[in-house]
Amino acid sequence: MKAQFSAGGIVIKKEQGQTLVLVSKHSGHHGWVFPKGHIGDTIEGESKEEAAVREVQEETGITGEIVQAFKPVEYWFAAEGEKIHKTVYYFLMNYVSGDIADHNWEMEDVEWLPEKDVAERLTYPSDKEAWREAQDMINSNTKARNPKQ
Image 1: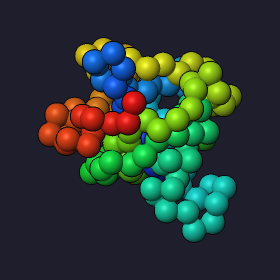
Image 2: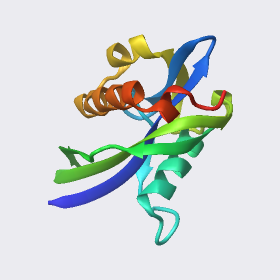
Image 3: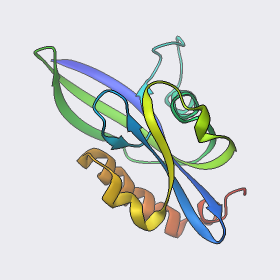
Image 4: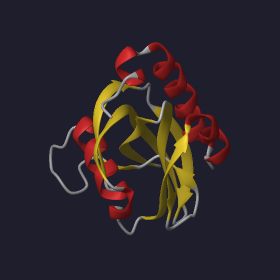
């Protein structure tokens, strides 16, 4: 058994009176997900917060500011015949800057979706679990409800 640790973000922004949420379609497995990636894979000693902000920017072209942490999401998967226990640290983030056209090769598509359409678009149970928690945070957190435009 192997363990992996990743961090990522659920980024929101307000536009024309509605909350939009950043989602991305992975180039490898073609699933719709929230951006995330390995902690410390390119920067030694990287914190999960630093990894989350970096991965969101690399994969989507968007810079986010962390508002609040989620409880970790855990799941199992198999790769190259090995069972892997994955822990993902997601953070609710407010949009700061950037353009989704600047996403990297890891994502074949990146979109801003209205909050009401996110659950239907997501492919995996772990992302849907994180989204349920994010909705509770968005509805109860003033800073998340009123991010920078």
